[in-house]
Image 1 (cartoon, rainbow, N blue to C red):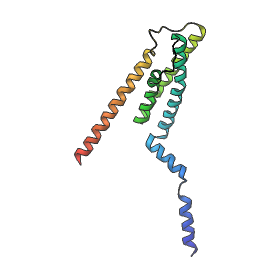
Image 2: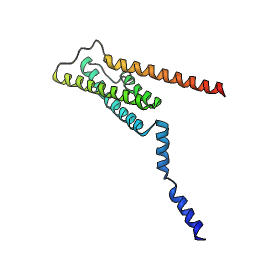
Image 3: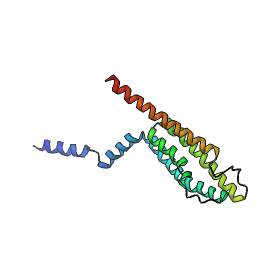
Image 4: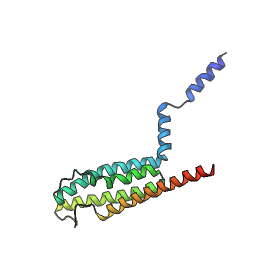
Length: 157
């Protein structure tokens, strides 16, 4: 008679806590653990780049930088990283984010010493525009491939 009670206690002990199940679900939805950590780090880098970009726009062009037009090109690549959830894609995009963050830091340093770089207008630098366009192209191609995969799967059933 003691055996079933011991088995019942053993079954209860082996069930993972609720937070582990939620963490496992998040990792499944957002890719592997390394990809998830990298995407979160990219989100933090992007969050740090937004006020820095606003500072550059306000200092060089003397324009109020509260406009969200300066935010979307920084946030969109992170959103693409979170949507695509590919490890190598995240590594490449994160390395581009790090390069852009150092570039932005260099711009701020040049502003502080009185020698800002050349800017033709209040737009972002060429590298940031290129990164934004690249992320839009990657998102469009990813969504197109997903649509093709869904249609192919529906067609073959």
